[in-house]
Length: 576
Image 1: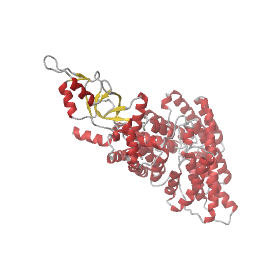
Image 2 (image 1 turned 180 degrees about the vertical axis):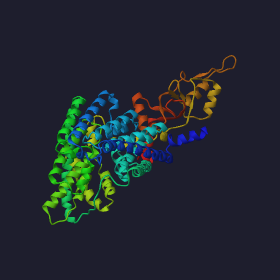
Image 3 (image 1 turned 135 degrees about the vertical axis):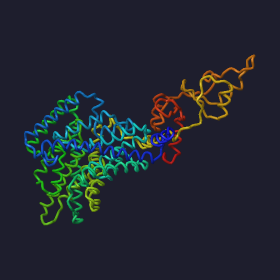
């Protein structure tokens, strides 16, 4: 029984077996979706149960006093909560996930997970102009990471499992499993890895199934029937892409500008945001909360142009401010809101300019949503796939590609701006995109380049013991207490010149005292990847590491050198 348990643990955690990782990803996808469903219920229940409104997004149905009381109370609660939190527990959202994936191999702390859940519920229930998808990404990745840490996953597999949690989160939030997979790889993992596709797809499907079982099969938005009426609309779609790129650029520049407020204490920058939100909501309560009811009304063409323009500008101001000062909720939802307002404006403008031409306002609203999402988040493929899944209409693909690509090019090539997440992380000071070599090394288990031709030896060995060790023809002898490796040829030379005493006995061989080309080693866990190994070698200025099965360094399973890793990179098919 113990053997079977050990074998199963090794299959899941300390191997490159895809079946074990796929099963773990399926479990992580279900668990992540359940956590996110509880998060969603925690938002909806107070608003529909206590305040008795039909829709949790419908803050405009509340009285003015109720809205102000909620906003001010929620803002004060968040300021008090984060004032007493330790700085390392304040990291939340997509940017926190990206940092932990880049710098900590996907290890997401439980404390930050709890902070995100509580803080995002307070922020959204109180009506702040933020979204739930960013917190959902953190909750999904964090839940999956906790499962992976409990299973003792190797680092390169833990990153994939955390990405699976992200896919489950997006899938459960929008009921868009394909977009969940693409978002996880395009935004969080920053690569399309063949080994990651199967577990991430399984987790995304699990998220969609759990969401559908609890909340029904409807997608997040009520998408009307639509179609592009004529190829003559293509210039107008291109114009939508350009204007969408300009609005996305304005959003990112506003985030950069509002980041200057980070020099002030939290009570000032969050308090000012709360008061501003309260003031604007007196005229436009539709800006409060997630605002998907307004997005659905825009898709149906029920919001007039003047209101759409005001909502666009108000959301642009409030959501960029919240993103800049690390307010503990998301910006993905606000990005879709801004895109919907822009697309609705363009659709209504087209109907006003050409009243005789039948135009679908919902069609342009969707294109605006995709354009803003792709350009602001730097996730064009995820945005396109989301449009396809939301509409279940392949006719959206060609116009969607045009709008999304043009908007993305305006942001990235005309204005040379990174994604909003990179801006939030400090413009590269706290986070840098890995180069392709680093990406490959981080995704490759250290065992792939490890040599197992070694013998663990004490410092002093008898002649007989030395002979037995040499019979095994190892490449190295590992002295664990001294943290060195010794070539076996040195022992052979020592035995040749060893002289017996008067009783005919040969003295023990001191492996530290004999002449030898010894190499200093440090210990590393078998969970590590190749980039971990290179970083540790550079830190200690050494060329060799002893690899141990567990973090207690109780049993060495191999040796790895910088040369071995370089050889793997140059000659292994995955390293080319």
